[in-house]
Length: 104
Image 1 (cartoon, helix red, strand yellow):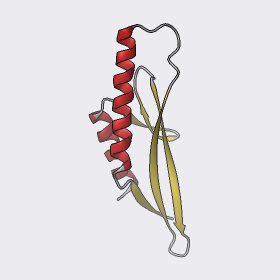
Image 2 (image 1 turned 90 degrees about the vertical axis):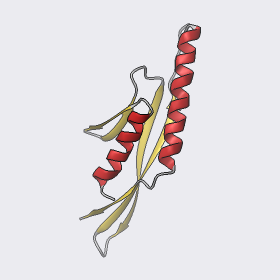
Image 3 (image 1 turned 30 degrees about the vertical axis):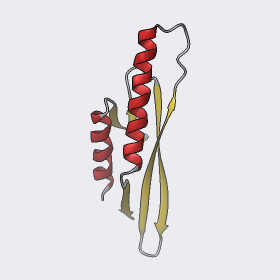
């Protein structure tokens, strides 16, 4: 797969689970409006220097952001739903082969 194809898979899956994935100056980023969950996308690189190729595997992780304050029961239920959707998204993306090859 190409880098663009991998990014398109992530974008489509993120949208399917109600999140936003977009290209930034730092690479691909997944976010949600309420900022209940923080997503991290990291790259594991394995270079074949002789053939001038780099295999890049993307890893997606999520963590719970601090909620603080005195949220209502509805706010807590909304946050719980967001956390559930984030966990499902990460699980689905972990099962994808999110690896692409770069030639340099």
